[in-house]
Length: 427
Image (cartoon, rainbow, N blue to C red; front, side):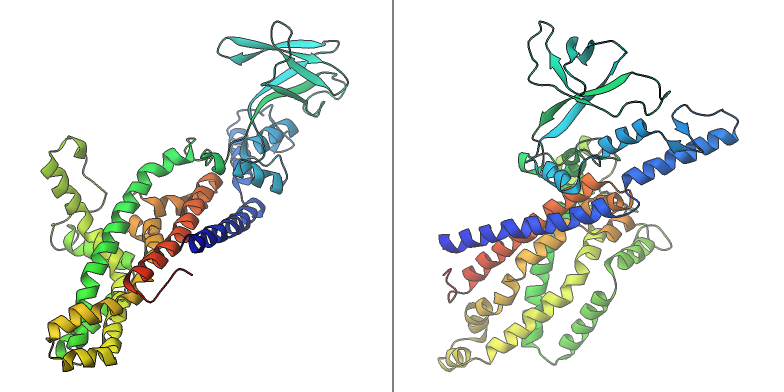
């Protein structure tokens, strides 16, 4: 068994890197990225300022074209100042990332400049050659934490200006392999801080919907198999497939209209995850309020999987009932209840066990449309909005979590399958 799981884990590594490389390259090369959007906003602001008679900006020349130094700063901020393969390695955390940039200007004939690095500390940046610069402590010893690099000179001012622009910076290995998913362009916060509260919401609805679906569909599938062809079987199939054919978000909108105070009954809230002041409620009040907000979203969340699980369970029961071991059990005089629940059921849940890992990966990822319909700030809504906003750190963080969930879910499916099927061995 250990060898089997070791092979599966080793197989996860190229799968993970293949998925992330593909998406990372597409995001970096796709037009309309965060850099282009920022440039458009700056140019639009400059145009509005010009129409209002506010004068021209010193940073915008040539009809709203950003200066070269400003463009370099934007590229550095969004991480587009390096080749795409270097950016990927930096995102992984195996290539040093430049942080805490400080610009230093050398006037003609100047050979050293004192620069503040924050916290009341200063460094000396010294010219050591035409393009070589060093960073030193105040006592003159080399500073091992800061590095210097000369930037392109004479870009924004008079071409005869002999000032030299130098950038000092720190280097660190920081990426997903070190637990750093980056910083959101939209929220200006670490991606983990942005995802954490939303991930909890999607886990709540995803796992709750997962358990509800299995708790309902397994008994329903057994009942339909035992009453195959009856009125109950036909009516339940019709209801299940009608629910399957209706998208969850559309059903959610209808439920809100009927039961959320829209046109009929005001029974449930019109959305949201919890009421305001939830943290100040008693334990019983918190439970009641959470259930009050969760019932309609859970119905919309789980309705789509009911048909698949129910029909899968029913067909599996019918197939196993016709097997020789079941006829032998009946021939021995065992009751129908004992044969079904002790003999047939275990073999019938094998197809459902193989579906567990896949279901967990999908459910925890959230559903954007359902979260929008119920105004729930969850994982799916956050990720979709990040795609629209070109917030690449959140998109890649979402991808990492979803890929890992799917890969781990496949292993969970194998474990569940081996648990319910004694014929399977990890060899």
